[in-house]
Amino acid sequence: MATRNVVLSQHQHELVESLVKSGRYQNASEVLREGLRLLEREQVEEAAKVGVLRQASEQGWSDLASGRFDDIDDESLDDFVGQLGVRAAKTQSAG
Image 1 (cartoon, rainbow, N blue to C red):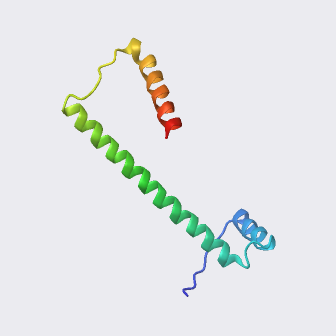
Image 2 (image 1 turned 180 degrees about the horizontal axis):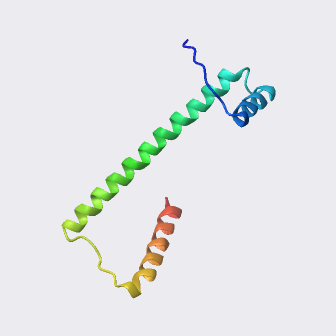
Image 3 (image 1 turned 30 degrees about the horizontal axis):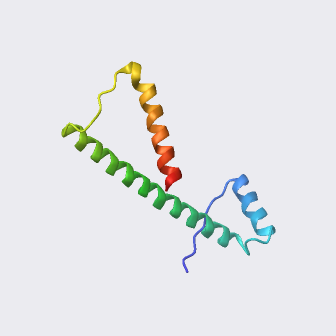
């Protein structure tokens, strides 16, 4: 297993120490490995979100280019968005 030296702020040092003292972790290395696992998971989830948003934007641009859209005037926008929310809530509760 590779060995690294890391520099922690006082706050980070105290946090690691308190987690070890709590008994949840046996040593500082376990705390840091857990932190890295969480960071890795967060990055995977963020990448997945970006992928979904990218796909949605591509679909939106495609729909726009193909004329598949509703043109809503400024005065009706709030009502239109509210109706979308109602439809989404119904879809969510039905699923």
